[in-house]
Length: 439
Image (cartoon, rainbow, N blue to C red):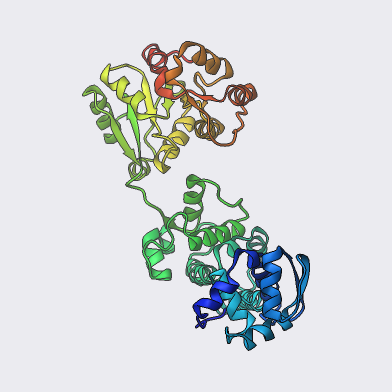
């Protein structure tokens, strides 16, 4: 509840009351009124100088001495109504402090009522959708309450997102969250993500990454499949696929140089032809999935994996013989799929990225999936600092990120506070690609 349509004080009255000597009084009165359902009861304390004591005493019709004074709000309200102001304390305080007062007690009660209604509505929606007795519902609801994800979003956003999430989850139960063993691929409905979003939220982008509805649905899928909540684009994509939903498989690509798959598969032949023509290839997730049985490399083949396109561009410019893959920063779904396939085929994958905190975070994920560090140790970082001119170094920003393959790397980077971008080590990286040398 807020005060609205405030009367305007006559100019002489406003000038009298708005003197800086009374500013502390009106601020204190505002705080008390907003905690007191806007009722002018109780008292406030205010430090008054000689001018403030004179003005307030004149208003109240009494003599006041300067100093810390306790003022009855009821008496102040009555004095204002009897004065030329012709209005009560609430209106005067609102005008003098520049904004309407809020009944904070009522607002808090209304908010609590609204959140109670939201949880009741969610319970009803789950019952109507036939989901109330699902074994994973309690875990899902517990996570929503414990993480505060709905509270942070606000009541209106949370309400809309939950409605869309329940409709989406109910729709997906037509393709069971735990499909029966032996169920054929054609026995269930497969959705494109945008198709599902349009069907359940009315917005083709309603389940896009980062949307609250999408986050809630993925948490439900994770709970139903007894999997961790997703923490990366790749894990989110895999969760969608768990229930037959295809995300974007075309726009995200991974760049490759000199990838020459063996065998007679037409795709392998095409890739070798592109390599012979010294062409860089942008692989999509759709392409990689179209050829799931085609070998990418012979076991033990050296494959370099870098973070920045400039490294791959230079390798192509010099027609280097080594295989080089570029994730272009945090790899797309196609990049993660290619990495998984390379590791599974027995390729010897080595990764290099920026010596900054985002770069270390990417390196940790890539290495965790089976690659090994390529010039990404603490000594490589220290050597780069010693060799590079200061104008090619920038300060590190953000929080430190662990480097499990070499804990000293995190410590050294935090100590020196300087970033080394991958392009600054281009000559060394190209040497390795040319000579198939891992360091």
